[in-house]
Image (cartoon, rainbow, N blue to C red; front, side, top):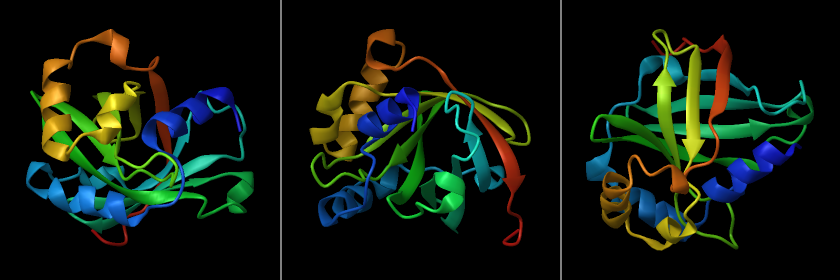
Length: 170
């Protein structure tokens, strides 16, 4: 696993969903927006230099998806696995992931900078200010509104390319 992915997992929570995080998901439901149909598929992060690693995004419903990080050709499925939904904060989309780490509960956030038409390419930045992990969804939303353009709370830009699209549910 490379350094960029480790940072992404740290700031997004990386691990297995727990009860406290499930409650955070439920409490923020009113803030959710519909996830673009084209998000479902297999995505590769350019900064992750191993050709064997990828993300699988699967639809749960219009406002909730499942995200799984697969490494080693998928032999490690389930270690980094959880749910995500999206928010619109002043016209900027955020992917909000259930914290996957029992030692660091809370939600993780990715600011979507660019999502190309057809959703085959995406750039995003992880929110690195860990104080957000202790906030309620409503407090976190207000924090993101206030610090939307503050480069000090984000990682360097990450680049994703969809390798395969699932469309069996369309």
